[in-house]
Length: 179
Image (cartoon, rainbow, N blue to C red; front, side, top):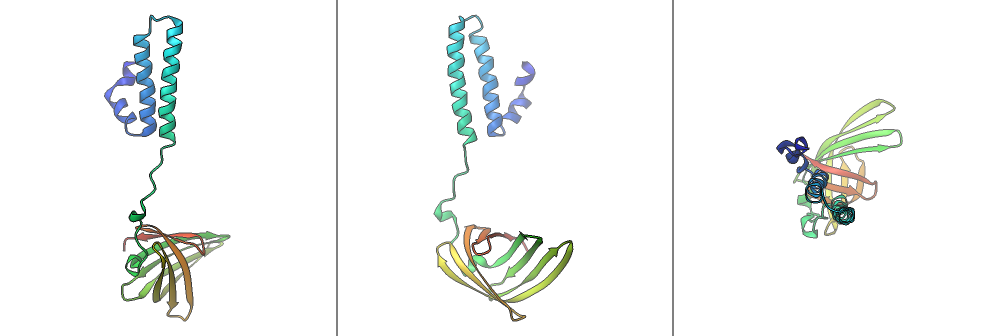
């Protein structure tokens, strides 16, 4: 039993919520054995039941613990300044896999590359052009791209955080990445 209650075991167990729960069960078991070793069977059953309920309640709280949703103020407001930077997209659609890295500059230009892999064949295309953003709501915007090659594209996005946006039209997540 002493090997279970050494400093390294306690330190490792206390580093995670489930480890804390297992440590709590272990300590309560040791305490129960010490205090109720010579107690009548009925007293042992009552104490065991109370300990079981307490540990179960604590365990339920740990398992159901969730990271709180960010406050509305924590989500950046959709704006032209918000979009400036490098954004990465990775997608899988049917047999097509691909991704893009696009830099959106303050002057309204974009440049980057798109990569696509179909049945093991890869293709990398450099892209560039101009971009415009239209605010649709506090955390929503429409992005319009006009490629130097003459093509156009647009998408509706929802801001999910400082470094994440969701394309609602094509259902993918774009991530801000360092240059």
